[in-house]
Length: 443
Ligand code: AMP
Image (cartoon, rainbow, N blue to C red):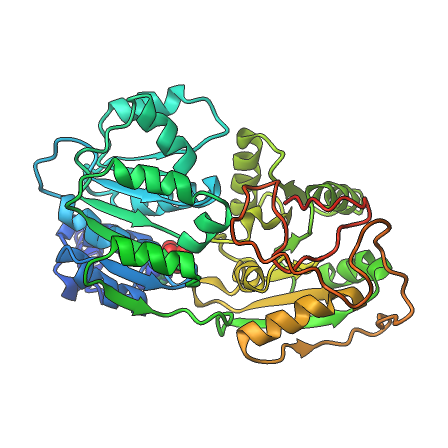
């Protein structure tokens, strides 16, 4: 075959694949957005997308009851990108509020990916880093701003962020925003927005406060309900009953398994993240820790490193339990049980993403039974128990808490929902304090 003929065939083939139909064609999205979808490798819409995109494109409000991992970022991003494509804009027209910096970054990356063949600019704003760079970026009049409420409010109050032309507001992980104590900030931001606008609210759970917010905010919304509190079906999850003192040995054994390619390990406190990261590093693992005491630059560096597979293991507090999407995490290991039953679903949802299979193990000591009962009640079934040879529960294990913990078998019920920000949290289920004896729970 002549070189020119081969080149022509190749060119035609790549044109054909660039035009290959995707299940997204039916939504009538602008061609440049469809190209972005193809480039992202999405072949067919997820069910949240099938239901949200048409309503979102028409400018309707949306209430999405969905956990992360369902494809909800693209579900709101695609119709909003389409709506602002050719509009004459006077300023930022889409505001997305998210509870954590990591989630805000992740949303921005996904929107940028989908908008790569458009001129639309997206800027992220969050606290913990100097404002200057964010202010410079805002000067370039981005069409979309993604941010955490605290920093959005600061910038707004300093006159650096103008929200007078917002046409669509997205509140992502509303229940988590609430748990982190952000609702007063959110309400103040709402006051600064034009009254006439489209609202899209996403939440994995619907506590009363979020129901009230939805009532205040949404007009005749399209309700898309995907969430059950149960974990997604691609996750194979089990509990391992084990004494506190054997956790490290069991962890080593699981990490050495052939099927363990990449793992996120959750611990209860920042201190435990530090200690376990150090221990695993000394045992020769490629590991990094992430917790709320780290600088933003370090947190970004760790997340980037983990995404690029520079580390196989990430040890974390609940700061990364929600929303964070890293492909190829084969295992989630709850070294300590989470604070709340809801957090269980979020933590283990870090694996089994994008319809891949994932494995999640939770180490349960005899002092975690209150949590276990509450969790099984919430997800509606009994989680399977896995036995690992050489690791048996020890029913005579001494309570690992020295001071002030709840009396044996009794769980302090701090059910206040006015959740504090990271580092000041307290369990809804009143799990007793760790070995340091402090009642303050840190993530
Ligand atoms: P999210 O729930 O938005 O965090 O999305 C979870 C993951 O699914 C992200 O990595 C998305 O890029 C990916 N995703 C979203 N929609 C699709 C789709 N239609 N096909 C394949 N992957 C998708």
